[in-house]
Length: 334
Ligand SMILES: Cc1ncc(COP(=O)(O)O)c(C=O)c1O
Image (cartoon, rainbow, N blue to C red; front, side):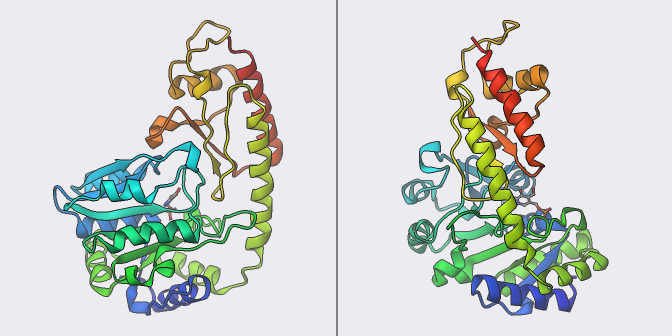
C-alpha cells in the first residue's frame, strides 16, 4: 500500500543520487500525487489546535488541507524585497508551543522563490532550538531551477533535522507526468507507517500502472532535464523582461519553478478606459481578462498581494503575445 517495492527502491536511490540523503525503501511512501502525500501527513499528525507555519504567498491547497485535517494555518509574511522568502527572524516569531510543522516549498508555487543552502541553514538553526517542530518540505519543483542556482533540501543541509523531516517530491513537474498522479516522500518510519494506515483506508494506494511508469522515470535517462531547464529559463527571462517593461509592474526574476509573481501595487487606484477603478489585484486580473483576454491569477488567492501569478509553462510565442497585451493594458490605465 505504501508503494510497489521497485518504486520504493527507485525513490531511495533518487534521494541518494540527487540529494545525498540516505533513506531505506521502508522509509518511503508513494501516494496518488504529491497532494495525497501532503494530505496523509497532515491527517496522520494534526490534532485540533495544532499549527502549521506556512509562508505567504503559498500554494492554495496548503491551508485548505490543514483546515480539513483539523489544524490551524499560521500564515507568515514574506516580502518581494527579499524574493518572497521566509527569514529566520520571522520563523522564530511564528513558532509557538502548538507548532507541529513548518511547511517549506522550494522552488515555490506561486513565487518561484528557491532557498539557497545558506538560507536553509539559517532556518535550520532556528528549528534546532525548537525540537517539537517538524519540517515538511515540498520539493516538487526541484529540477526547475535556473542559472547558477544549486538546489538543496533542508534535511541535506542540516542532518540533525533528518529525524523530523518529511521530504516530499513527485513526478508531476520534472517528468511532466501530472496526469499519472504519482507523488512520494521519505521520512521517519513511524510517520510513514501512520501515513500508510490512512492511505490504506482511503485509496489503498496509487495505481500500479502509474507506479511502474514512475519507476521508469526515476531510473531512466535524466538527460532531458537540463534541456527542459534551459527552455524554461528562456521563457522566464522573456516574461520577466517584458513585464518589467510594462508600466507600473515590478517583476523579480525568481530562481525556479515555472511562475513569476509580479507586483501591481503601482497600478492600484488607476482607472481603465471604461472608468473602472483598479482597487485590488483581483480587479486588475479581471479587467485584464476582460480587456485583453489574458488569464493570470490574482495574488490574494495565494495570501499575498497586490501581485499576480503568471505560469510560463507554455510556448514563447504565446507568452510574448500575452506580455504584449499586458503592456498595452497597463499603458492604457489613467
Ligand atoms: C507546490 C506544489 N506542490 C504539490 C503539487 C501537487 O502535485 P501532484 O500533481 O503530485 O499532486 C503542486 C501542483 O501544482 C504544486 O504546485
